[in-house]
Length: 407
Length: 85
Image 1 (tube, rainbow over the protein chains, first blue to last red):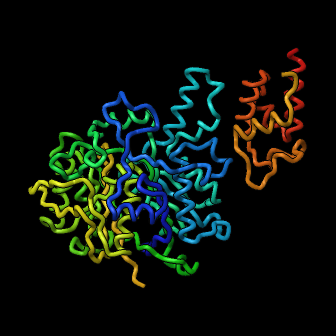
Image 2: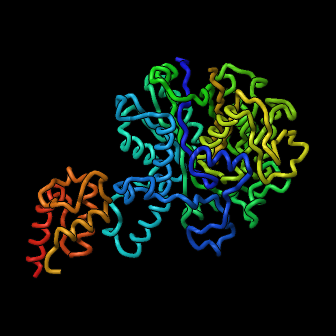
Image 3: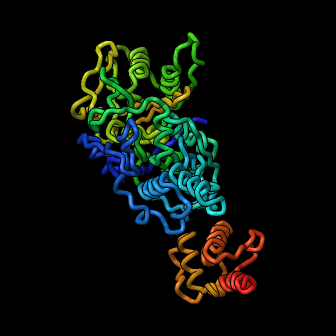
């Protein structure tokens, strides 16, 4: 079945803004959300910058009953899902429970909550560990809590593929709808800013140790030296086109037209990385050609070898400087499961507003990347089709194509 | 502590599991079921763990899930406190 799947609602929680319009305004104005880590004393660590959400008061957004049992990542996910449903003007109580599903991605689970419980375990004893740790830690908890809160009993799942996972969730949400569930809440949110979570971030070897927030995360720059981790992400409401029309849907942001994912070959293999193939398959899945793509939202890790591999894949598909490329994620930090969904939000708003946000920070792009990277200021341009890329550590590559919906 | 009161229990329930928006915990809830108050079995297990820490009375899981109301729970806890003397 290849029925059209529309995006009818968006919810964003990012260091640059709580809510879609705040996020988008900051993105177009180049206002960043990278700051010194304040969640714990990070002075002794080699990297101390992160995309922290500083203005989220959980009490204002989450019912009191859910506070003792949720990690910060789940609280952000619940808030974003609520905002997306409100944006889509969906009243879950008015719809059949088995006709609504939840498909989210997660890369780190409930780190901060779990770290606190481990501390109690080792310093006080097992009887002091919260019973809620039984689910607050694990990857499916955001799907579970969103599902329970809104009474969504349809097919639901959770996918884990680091930075590629959020795109996989959206792809699987589309598949779920095509299999017969009219509405699916999808996306991803991650947060791991406690001492243990921070060490896990640093263990990748890819976190930037720069100290200037504006020059720390420079994807495709000659001086690229890693990324800055962020917290947050985005939730999207996806619906069967027919169901959306029948519901008298308020607005449609676009269509999830194409999706594909691939794995890299094992280390030492002579075969190339899988990103190019994922992109080509997603474009083909959308029934389109490379020339139809108006903009690419890049994975943009900010590690030179990985930037070059991505630039090579893009040049191979689109030709040298063959398509505008951008990475608004330098303002929010790298969001792991939230990254792909938030890039999809940016892509859909680019379509809505006819403007491509710039890649803040990056200044000096090597010529041999053959990249048309949008820098400095947003570029006004009609956008009706966008390609979003995501690579997850340990070999995941995913791509989604979104298109405008006429009328 | 000689006895655990309904106020003690209220404070522990809210601390462990929050409170439902449409429920007035300050009313006389002694004979309202935990289910009606919005507290599931996990909330009760968490509450029991806290009662053990604060009052020294152990409530095994299979006992806790059978206590349907605040009155029933307080009776068991205070019975346990009497025994401990």
